[in-house]
Image 1 (spheres, rainbow, N blue to C red):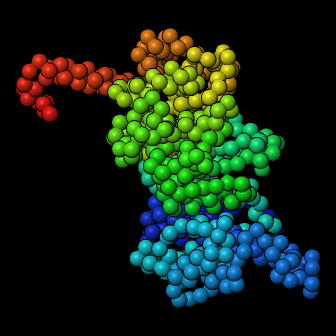
Image 2 (image 1 turned 180 degrees about the vertical axis):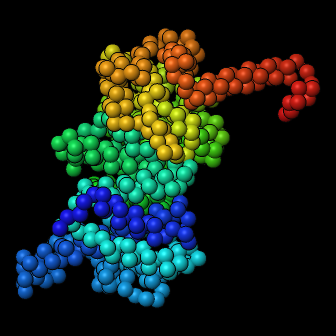
Image 3 (image 1 turned 90 degrees about the vertical axis):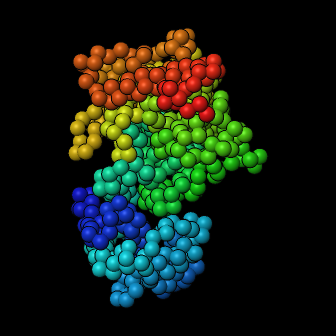
Length: 504
């Protein structure tokens, strides 16, 4: 007997609500996802056992049955065997997770994360029992919940946890309309590799595979790779991929900029067909001290207090020659900031790697209300786009959500069409497009501010995000000009203290 999607979502949210009160909503994901995953593999194991028994009857032995199971669950680790224990339930769950991971070292090592299940200050026994009772009401074997349905339920929880977590959600969740836009632009193909160097909960990797699946192409040949610095989030990503019936993947935990996990035998970063990411904006402590000697430092070293271009450089370095393309979410500041970033920006444009700049609406992301953009790079651009950059202004394509701006499926399709055709989408207002030659960008000092190339009347857009960008642009130019002026005054022997500036 199958379960309807709305009923599954309702029961999953009931499980999360069992923690409400003693557990901070920002920590719901730490406890709910491991329990969901355990319930799924346990119910599935029982279903597989019953299938084997129906087929072989009294002839069934351990060797035959092993072929029916995707994961090995040692005796005493099934959901029903553990959750009925009345004392020290948290400690029993922690031991169970450890035993399951040890029994499946190649696939499940570390998958349950590092939650303190036995710490009743973090998760009281009453809350844990409420979580167990909620999951007792859901059967998660294949005869009741399909992989598509279970994957959708997982995404539902991710979205709801993001809503509950507010700005903290930016660490693990990218709005799905942005994910679908990036995937639609990059168009991963069967047999290719896709890599996310800051994969969060794995949403972009899941979306690439789902796109192939939904278009009727063989998604099983797509190979997914990801790196994530946060242990809990990396575990959530692995569970997400398993629950979406994706097996050919490799998620590694670690600091992508300081210690990239995917390398060749020669020690260089590995190359992929598609590189896609929403890295943390303007990271301050990113490892600048070693970057000057790093082969990824294409065209220069980013500022020590801003790692935006370090992620761009890493992703471009990870792009496979010929077929490689990159799609990355960035704050608008990368388009116009001066200093070291201007040098890197110029170098990437001169190498003809930057294909497109796509402006997004403001207030789309959980972590910030400022508008962001997509930068699209290609190792080999089409003939008509060589020595050009395609600018797309999609800042007006949004609706109002509960706490944020929301892009509809039609908005996303309009921007994908604008990218593919290089022109405004048919019958759709709000997406302004222009293919700009290299010479014009050069005349503008390699400034990529979208407003320099696509003129939209302020009274038509009334976009506060655009005003913020214009302000930031003007402010940065003033700072750069003042720095040059003070440097010249100091060289001339002028006492800068009269301007309130240190001479050091």
